[in-house]
Image (cartoon, rainbow, N blue to C red):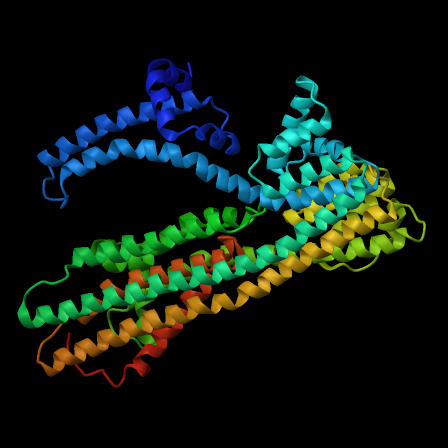
Length: 593
């Protein structure tokens, strides 16, 4: 028996009561979220986890009272009462979250599905038949599921295709999809020009995407400003408080801000802020249904070496016993030589320089791979748009689509050319268009290029590849490339902000440290400056590295692009460290530490 079946059998009454608590619209929310579970059974599972949380709350209450009574500053009763409410809250929020995610995915897929049905309609294929052909297309996963349900409604339930399309439109959380299909059904029943309606409706969708792209740029700018405000000002404020507290402790001998609290803030709280922003940016940005994972494979394949370098170059200075191991002692000597002899920094900066070197060497392969793959993807996307426009003009001369492709393969389309030469050879050998597309999709990871090639293959294979059909396809491809170019231009200026924030963070911290030491010199007090720098700067460098990941995610909608910015920000931090002695020379007074 499955967990759902067990919960429904054992806690069905509680599930019905919980369903009544959620309200009558909760069943529609499950339908919109594509949660294929009977509502009472779903609520029974929530009731099961609520009971488990009750027992967990009791155990947590007695454990804290018995062993750790001083760790929780607030009443334990609050924890006991809050834990059972978490499953109920999550159970209600999960369908809403899935609906929002599904709506975002459909907003990306529906314009391309509309373009596909329009291209097919110009070749004489009905929209229902076009959607049915999407059953075997993983490029549009949400519409793939919808087309399978349409097939069940028509073949299994006996609905006519137009009624099935109307039913599908009413149950999905996509306004564009609903308007497209309901308008098509109305146009068909009234005897209107279906092809003209689909063409105009698809053009409206792509114009709406222009507005949405601008909104994405404005939202990204707002998110970047909020992140910089939180990440930079909060870090500066608390670093200043900790430095001042250490200085005051030298005079009053009263601890104000403990080192443990600072470590918790610097190594846990700041990275959690960056991770939270990564998640928030991910759910707020439109995304294509698939993405290239090769950069992540490169990063995870080099991760063991990355971790080893962090241990050798950074932790060897924090743990003296580790630095005494022969292989690690050589790394300690190397970092010390780089810090004191080549960079001209005083003692205490070795751990920071070692961490920077670890981040640079560990991120370099992934950053290089992202640059290579991104350049290749953008080149193929631009090349396929130019190729489709030339294909339309060649097709108007009367040549068959196959001969047009073979003729155009001799032209230069940048990164697309080698793939086009392969396609031309396959056509000469008599390979089917289906196999040609499969080979292209295997070698090309760009979703935009793959969907354009799929539309072209189907337009030729099913619609005959008429000039009107190819003209429609080329126009939509040009609009897409223009939108992507405009989006990159809007987001590019935002990437300067993290570099300014990183420079301010590192430079301010170093200047304030040296200034505080000078104050203590004047007061004839001393502080272990090298230990102070070792405590303060490494978590700041880690925070700067995370800022690079967030900047890449906001600027290009991919965390993989963040590796490049994290690398550049770390190099920028090293430059600031090298220049810091010259920038702080006015505050620096000699003191033996």
